Image (tube, rainbow over all chains, first blue to last red; front, top):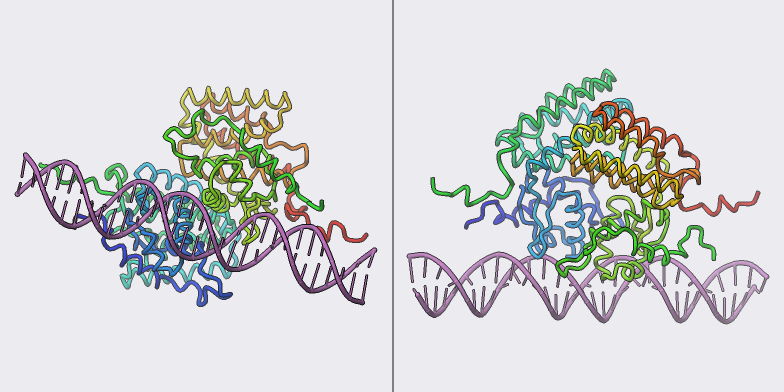
Length: 254
Length: 254
DNA sequence: TCTGACAACATTGTTAACAATTATGTTAAC
DNA sequence: GTTAACATAATTGTTAACAATGTTGTCAGA
């Protein structure tokens, strides 16, 4: 058993995709099969929750079994995932959860720092009272998850907060971008983050919520910029080279 | 011949994809076939140049012939294009060049207004002298194309300018986003723009170049913001509902 | 002449078998 | 005991045939 990354657990991990999130009670209302869009979404979620660590092999047969669909649909889903750089497709070798490099990590944070302050501002400007109530409820869930030490749930909700903001901003283009960026950020934290680091401190999220309540878009933008800087600062970019551990340097004598 | 959109010209349009842009002399150096990434890029270019207007049907067989590849590769390419919302995939009915709605158009411009000023600033900060020289050369080409009234070339170069900035900014994430947004903008202009409107006035691009030469990132960002506002302002959003003409309202009595 | 049903055609979607490549485990030789 | 070559197994990539759906043209009936 020389496996460095938990590729030997692929099956377990893949199966654990199934009971992920309720999503909808009846996903296939019209007798239609599960769509690749759903598969992509599910794998996104699993990556966000760090149940699929970087480098994990996503074998076609396992995914077919897990989702109960044909190979074609899995291949299409993997292609879509690779086009968003959440999955790396190696010819004749299969699909692997991406292992962002430090360079890519910086690029992701640069993109987020460009998009998210504006998204936060727009969200404040466009939020209905119901939206703000939802955010409040969400933050309570986040807090509970942190207290109950349900790490997966905490991480998931933490990412979901940023997605929620993009949804409130009501811009489908930026929402799609954010889904990709949040997912990749989870991979980045998995690689470059200290073991104890979860995605976000929910204190920061709380402050952003206050900006919503006082309808201060500029403050929300500023808080978001600070929040992102803080997350990036907690990472150790520039040390580890890649998600796949380099064996020769790791076990070299002396 | 009841065709509303030039779907009857599909074959001609598709064939005109072939001699598009030189790209590289030898695209298949290792005996490998043309990759779907190239196909996607080529269709992107054709859309940017408005040789593939919104609503154009992209039939699998025609594309197979045009690119000389199997159906599987075409289908994968179309899936990738649809994931970037440049192509719309209708079940059992085929692939069509997307027809952005006014709502989507506003979202695209909102995303560009969020991203591109920062991209311009970063590009100024990171541009080498060679980069600036390239920009100068590019602007000359743009100017020539306008004077020679080679509309296709002018449009292509006009979009290419924005891509160039993203390349100089050296952020792969934002570069990919911009390729998608520029392509979709071409579709939007095709639908909502006045017939005479090309993509950008190259005067604006010239001013941005001046900001590069004086290394004024803040000015570049401001000019870019103005530039985008100007383009969006030249459109007629809120009138036409979609690229596919609504027949009943068009030919209704009275 | 116009309408509606039907049939032939074309196009897309899916499946399964096959080919090619990679990974793994074994054996033999040094 | 270690290494290298080989053979086997597993996985991915491709092709082609088939099924299903949508489109179009035709014909009969009103």
